[in-house]
Length: 269
Ligand SMILES: Nc1ncnc2c1ncn2[C@@H]1O[C@H](COP(=O)(O)OP(=O)(O)OP(=O)(O)O)[C@@H](O)[C@H]1O
Ligand SMILES: Cc1ncsc1CCO
Ligand SMILES: [Mg+2]
Image 1 (tube, rainbow, N blue to C red):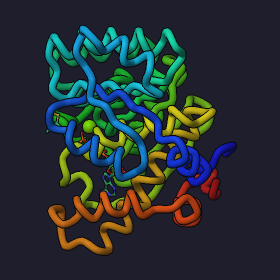
Image 2 (image 1 turned 90 degrees about the vertical axis):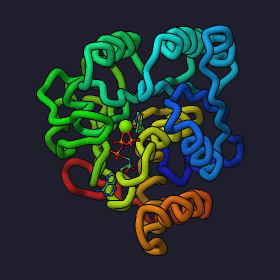
Image 3 (image 1 turned 135 degrees about the horizontal axis):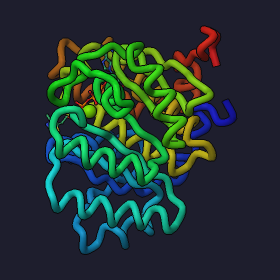
């Protein structure tokens, strides 16, 4: 890897990137706190009147369809145009994209606008890749491994980096692929963990040279902080504040020392 997670975290904290997050109502507060604890600067700006103008000053944009509605979609289109005008990365989170025709249509439109990064659970990535998914609502119901081939194809067809998250995460740009281990089984019992990880991918993408390294960095930061928080928590409720503490406490050296990142040959990256 050209830029390790720790190298990226040093850069992020030296100059906290402004991240425009168009996300769902459930995730707004959680994601803003996650970005602040990690060291970035969140702004939940989505209205059609200002989304494009704001995207031109942000370091990265993240777009999440969790609580989809017409006004959100209009804001997304404007913000993506703004980010593309100034060459900034944008990240797509296809929440429950398999669930309804509306979500499938909007997701197809957004993928066609060529996101820099797509991050979803296995059920969502399978659906985007045109494969059968066991997902119903926002929770993943498929194994990460089941979505790996689909993720590779999606990355190749869309020219983006695809992250599939779950018990062990998978990242690919269609050629390279890595697995990131760690985290906690209490993470999927905390709402909007994935949504806030998508926002952190935006923060890392704002400062990284290569979006593949950015995604690996963000996933590793979550995994290391999740493992540490698990050791100190008693269940999903006490996990949440300890996770924020751990995101903040993780130093660049500790991140590089504790990250469990493996290439597809099984070797440590
Ligand atoms: N069983 C698990 N063990 C360890 N970590 C997990 C587990 N399941 C999920 N995670 C971690 O939780 C984070 C969120 O991933 P997840 O796949 O649950 O997102 P999601 O389904 O999109 O979430 P949401 O839509 O609720 O925001 C990732 O960092 C992932 O590695
Ligand atoms: C619970 C929920 N419903 C719509 S979005 C969301 C947050 C997790 O994706
Ligand atoms: Mg999700």
